[in-house]
Every structure is written in C-alpha cells, then in structure tokens.
Length: 400
Image 1: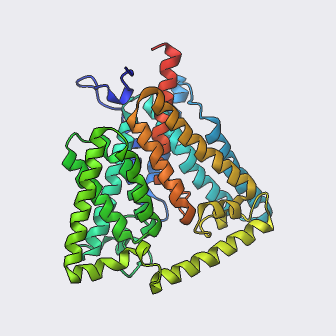
Image 2: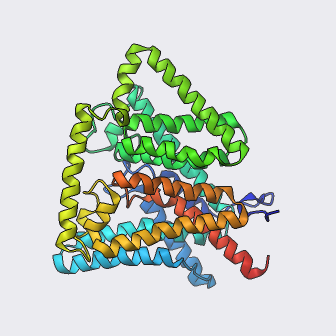
Image 3: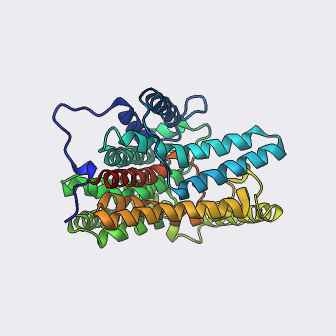
C-alpha cells in the first residue's frame, strides 16, 4: 500500500497557504493567456519575477537551502543559454540573448520556483495543475464564445485579429489554445469527485480544440484520451462520458445543416484537400526548407534564436536555432522529464504525476508538426513532476 502523498494530506484547520505559493499558482493560472500583455510583458512573467524576489529574500534571510534541479533540466537550460550567448556575441544583437533568457524563464525558472514554493506548502503541486487547467478552460470558454459571436475578446487582445473562423481564446494564436486544451485533458479527472463536472470540463476543452482549428491539437486530443482509458475506473468513466457527450454534439451538428457548414471548416484534420489546408501545407513546407537551410549553415550551433518559431516543427526549429547542441540537449530535457514522471508514478502510485508526464508526451507529440516550444504554459506539467520529485527526495532524506 503506497504512502499518502503530500498533496493528498489535508491541511490543518486554520492554516493558510503562504502568499508566495498562491502567487505561484496564480502564475500557472494566467500562463495560457499569452495574448494578454502589459506593454509587451506577460502577466505570468511579472508574477514569476515577484515570486523570485520573495524566494530569494527568504533564502538570504533564513538561509533556506536552494532546490537542486535534475541534470536533464540543467543540460537543457545550459544549452539554451550557450546558443543565445554565442549568437549574441557574433551577431551583435542583444535580442538573441533576450530570447534565450525568456525561454529559460519558462523551461528552468518556473519549475525551480514551483519546487521552492512547494517546500512551504506541500499541496502546491496539485494546486499548480488545478489552476493551470482552470486557466486553460477559461481560455477555451472565451474561444467558444468568440466563435459564436457572444463575445469578441481575442480581437481586442492581439494587435492583428486572426480573422476567419479559427479562434484563439485568451491565447496569442489558435494553435496555442488547441495545444493547451489537449495537454490539460489528462489532468482533468483528478480535480473533482463529480464525474459530470469533470466530463463537462473535458467537453469544454474539446470545444476549445475544435474552435482552434489546429490539426496538431485535434490529433493530440485523441492521444491525450488514451492513458485515461487504461487508467483507474474513475478516469475511464470520465473519459467515456466526455466522448459520449462529444458524439452527441457531433450528431446534433450533423443533423443541423447550418451548424454543420459552420463547424466543418474547423475540422481541418479531415479536410486535407481544402484550399485553406493546402495553403497551410505549402507554408509549412517552405518553413521546413528554410529551417533546414539554417541548420546546414551551422550544424553545431544553428542560426540563432530568431529561428525558434519559423520551422512549424519543434525538431526542425531546434536544429535551425541551435544546431545539434540544442536539439540533443532538448531531447535530454524532454526524455528526462517524462522518465522522471513515470518512475515516480510507478514508485508512489501518484496518478497526478502520471497524468502530468502524459501531458508532456502530448506536447512533444504535437510538437512534431507545431511550433510551440518557449511558451510558459507548456512547462507547468514539468513543474508538477519536479514538485513531486522534490517531495519524494525530501521524504527519503528524512526517513519518512
């Protein structure tokens, strides 16, 4: 029988979570809302900066030990910094270093701060995941409302509205909304005892994937369902109810000719020969060719951070940006994160960590044909895994 996990223990009555831990959870809540910015700065970055100051001040005053990050995370962040510094030196452009630092903020600082805050509030890992899912569900709600004309929120957030039928919710682009919804799905069943509530959130995420019109996200959403079908009975029931509800909605839309004509263009994964899809495929092929040429120009350290979002395929983007060095380091980062999550889940029976690891797998799989790599919301599942890992290491060191 596995030991009780830290996030499963009830807090003592009257004990409140530290403000810095709540700020960390709020940062995860707003991380999917990357269309919201304050003069070019995302709210999540401002919150993470405040948390960093608070954690650093406490460490200096109380001599708190710093959390040690695993080798795979250090390798990934070191390669990002190396590539940014190298291309800053030779291109005389500070933007190269700026982009690498912003990426490290997501890939390294966010998980590290989560671990540091969790030492003051062991339940933080679950709260990070929960608030992250709520933030994504809120963005999906905005996307659905914008699509049906109830609201027009996203057009007021982005400098150039997307136009057409595809929606981005509170995200900067539709692909971000779709990917976030697919990544959140494995975590949904862990946060409510009411199966219909969980199924409703799952259906909301399904709607977000559809209105995003992202082919990668629509395929990734199906992938996100698979482990739940083989998981605990409760998870299987939630997924089955979500699927049945989605099928019922699909039948209703099929019977309604006007609704079918509205939704059909969004299902781009099934319309490979439409004009929009063929134009997208041509653009992807051109971007892939440019990314490969950038890699060939410098196979070791690539063409610099300005290539990071130009390949429309994460493996190609990594090769184009930082050559073999960055691609290998990021492979180590991703493999290490998933391996740590699965290893910890097997040892402790922690279903939340298992779901977070699968959420990362969904991102990596979608990344083969999408370009999301440095956005803050992508690294919240990594933070959940590392919080659980740190808690397990601390329990072992104290003999509990």
